[in-house]
Length: 170
Length: 192
Image (cartoon, rainbow over all chains, first blue to last red; front, side, top):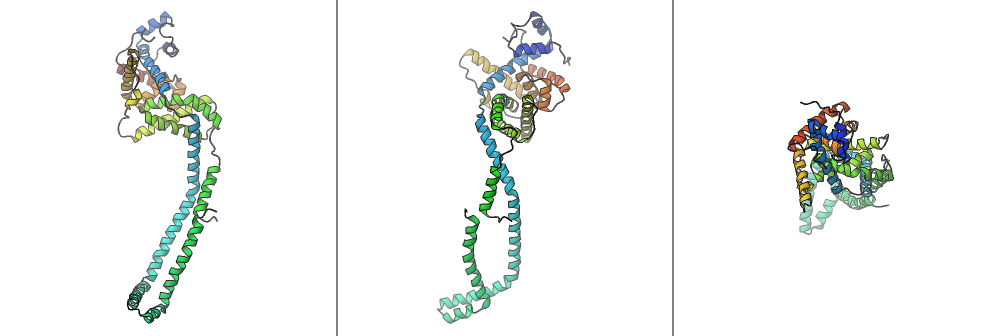
């Protein structure tokens, strides 16, 4: 490998970058380049690179600084908002997990009652189909059944109110 | 404790948005800096990635990271080196994520070659594109910064994360390789 050091390399480079090569350079530099492999390499690459740089600078489809600034602002705000909302999401996740756990526990407790309720529903269906009012009222007298109806009624009342307070805008 | 309602979440998001973003510079300073550096930076990105679309994306990302960096720059030159450093790292990250070599988009070398001079220019650009594509990533970065941008060895070292002393031999090898790929050497009086 040839020595990477040529003491006149910088002169050649400056001449090329200042568009002084070859006519505005002194003859000694031209003579040197003709006999220096390193400077010949330099000459071979710098010209095309400078031309390419010039062409790309002309063609560069860069957005305006105002747009770039605005996009950066928007993105920064969005990221800040996401960061601020992150603890809320975590707490919401924990709350959901707790709710799921409670639901599973409740199901475990109330499954026996649920099977009794199924029996009752069969009775009620039979009473309605036979228009037997006494059978229906007898069934409603069952405290478990009554509690079930009360829970459904209460949920129907409370759910819209809860949804309203969750999603309302001031 | 704040109840976790949708309205409260929106309020918090809005409040976070209102906290003015602590960017490294104000709008006027940024816009002036951008106007001076965007085109050279885009050209650098387009040439080292070989893809205009990627250059577009990385340009935006580079400036965003500069703004968010919260680094106090000594002067314009320092900020500029840092900008090119970010761009270089982003291009390298992207290069690592890709499985194949970067493809050169045909559009990147399209020129309006209606006369013989511009046709010659288009040929030269095509030759350079092909030769550049065969260089290593670091060689492309070095050559572009040194000869297209005219950066000093110290500036190149800062932008590429290399020791200043290692630039010269690396550049010498890269230059020799590109000259060979471009197919021979011009005569001493060729470039007018």
